Image 1 (cartoon, rainbow, N blue to C red):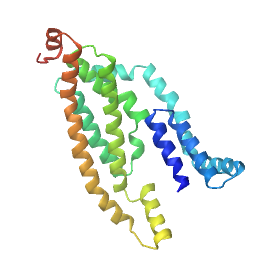
Image 2 (cartoon, rainbow, N blue to C red; image 1 turned 60 degrees about the horizontal axis):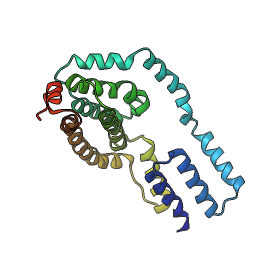
Image 3 (cartoon, one colour; image 1 turned 90 degrees about the vertical axis):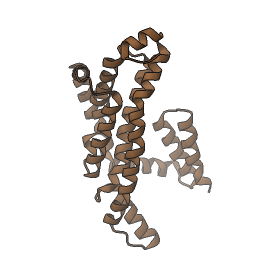
Image 4 (spheres, helix red, strand yellow; image 1 turned 120 degrees about the vertical axis):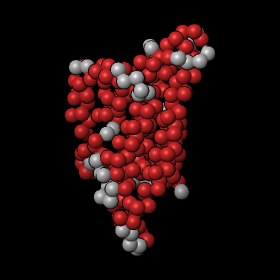
Length: 238
């Protein structure tokens, strides 16, 4: 049971909002030491894991591309386009993205979306542009609320819909683990079918939260501005 100390370290570190990479690394080292591994074996495990998962370094390619398209004005163009569509609100845009994210994840297209390549350069600016078109200039607290909901739409959509695709890594991991540990034969299609109710529930629950975002923004704007200015900016009732 002592090896579970690593899990406790992860929980404490995340609760204290420490650097996630640092927290996970320390938790892994502590768990390995408690499990009896030597420092050399721990280093070897880290090296083997990195060598077998070299795809994690793709951010080195993605990051400069995102910086370039932001420098060339993609965010501004997205905000300008959305500001011309009066019927769209921040909540509706993010709810629509949740639908698209779940649909693509269910087809195995996980790389279509994502926080760095889709949410930051495109989805969040569109939601922010819709909010600015309704309320005018936004303060940082309101922008942070929109950022959080934009990232959550991507994470929830991908997490609960990816298992619908039978060839995703998590499905293969579950079937292989159950087979080796419990000698039970699970078919990937069976697991994928059981993932559908969870994906539907996640869509209904989080979709409702996203649609409530517009009401939350109304209250935040009304609370941060004089009653007359808030009503004039976005039609918010004092």
